Length: 192
Image (tube, rainbow, N blue to C red; front, side, top):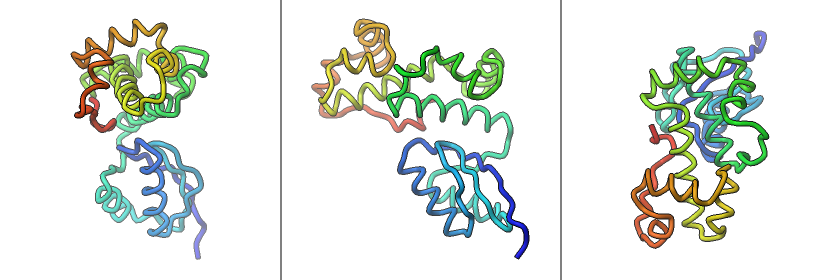
């Protein structure tokens, strides 16, 4: 048996805890030891890395192995934003998202913003808005929080700000949306 090597795999479309579970199980089936896993990123250890098999099993489950550095950085930006929004951490980060991304990625925000926009055809800010509104839709459908509580949880300065953005993007008020049987929700990995 050779020396076991550690590698970090970057994976597109890992957007929820179920995704983490599936990726972990599939990589372990291939004989890789999963050391650490989070949205979009897995640190593994193995004697060898069967990249074709890894790529195939990921694709069979709706994921994609990222090997391009620019794509990896964009995926990391998306994963951090999704994690903040869907783990209800927006109100606790104590800084704006641009500073948060700079700190976490050790990269100038202007560079991140330019790269993101050139590849995704939307700004980081617009991506954040789309993610927040999808989360708001989800929370509205659960009917457990008031609009004020949802606004706070998603880091909005006021209920009016959330309401205005919601109406502008969806064409509906939050109340109209809540009354619909068709929630018009989109998978979060398709919000670009």
